[in-house]
Image (tube, rainbow, N blue to C red; front, side, top):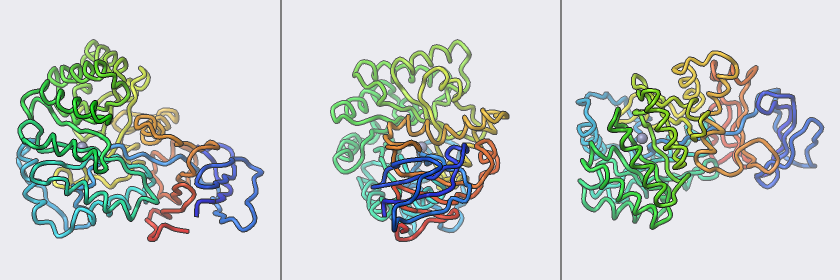
Length: 399
Ligand SMILES: [Zn+2]
């Protein structure tokens, strides 16, 4: 079912309208539209309609949600947590497809119909995690688009064979090359970055680098990333996830970094972390740096928190950024919807005719109020198909 008529909704909390979806795309929006004979009709009952949330950074292969509670009790060092995860994942009762499918269905139920997932690639794992996530997607692809980052979680240069596997991953379903803390993990920032830029440039892939490294080191590495993006003509194809170094930069450092990012077309994704200063996303956006928010690690060996709900993540951003006016709260919502779509170059995201027939209905008063109250998602539609209702995934794809 890719034709759908949704009556009596308020697009972006504006005036009441009906939405006509034909062949999976929005054909018309207006107050006087009528459904064609025999067409499936959904009564929106005055709900707000927004374009779907975009989950721009998650780890589908790491999720433990649905399994018994996992108590996190490991030394607080990146290397120790990496090794801890490898050990735990050896003996899980659920396979990658089961766990990844579980999280994808949750994301859809919360209104995200596009996911960018990092997937661990290493000599130990091979491409098993990639294959497992793709297997899970076979059962959810009617409801959610997926793009995959080949992620060297265990290290790149320190784990010989990883680069070759990442390159192979691009031939088997991944489209983005990942990276992680070039100094702390590999001990060679230039070497780490040269390797991932080389693979991505040769294979015409995008890049998405985890950069947790803070202070001067992180800012220095941002500069190295910008240099390489410009030198290879990869502007607008490189994203840095986290970039905590921007959260503590001085005004001068921040101004210099924003220049570099804007000039090299580098985007920023933040998970809005708990106690860590994070990039000033609204300042970056005002400056012309593309940015968005995402869930990142959730309910896994790294993080006991999270639920795959991007509306909750928008609220978290608004809370941590002290958004108080309606305009500021709506801007926080934008970071989980429109700005995420812009950052990931998604075509057809929106509620205008010609856009994908994908949307989320939420009962509420206005955009500011739904960010604060985070109501249950009344309906999630993907290209004309109802895929979740009242906060729950619909088995079988919905009619
Ligand atoms: Zn991550």
